[in-house]
Length: 206
Image (cartoon, rainbow, N blue to C red; front, top):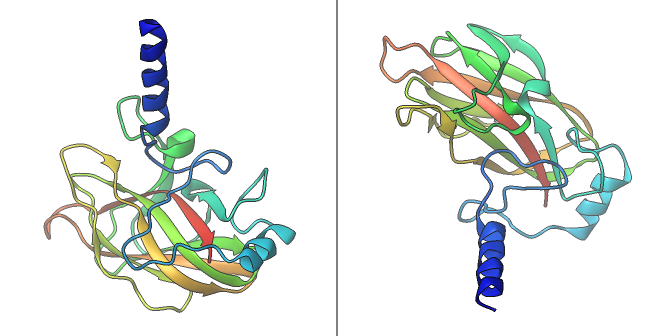
């Protein structure tokens, strides 16, 4: 009986331990929006998302969130620096799919433009999973011709890690192609190299 109780406790603990990084379409999602962000899912919007093409690389069973690996998105333009897909190190951040999109050697004001597809028109929360690190910089995000977000500082710690997810709430998106524009603000210090990494993005129907 004592052994059975121990096994039950271990099983419950395993369920409650949060999983880091980008969710896989049928396994994990980022469930905690920032304070004030919409949390309810409109059944009509959910139906619209699942009736036609998936919004962003989603496969398998219909979900209210569509997920895409950043390294699989089309790089439309890099105005400065280089953007490449890189593999995770064994002791590094556990990026979903084992890779991230890395943008480096940019200058303040340079932009990285990524194209993504939306299957059904509607209002979405756009959720980004960036990487943080000691020599990662400050960035803003813009979707299509919309307003830029606040500045996000991704410089943190002594090693690479997964930063807090970034929510861009309530974005109206038509069906078809859209772009996410990342703008470099500055590095850790003026003379520091600029780095930015993106693991994945999600669209969550509202």
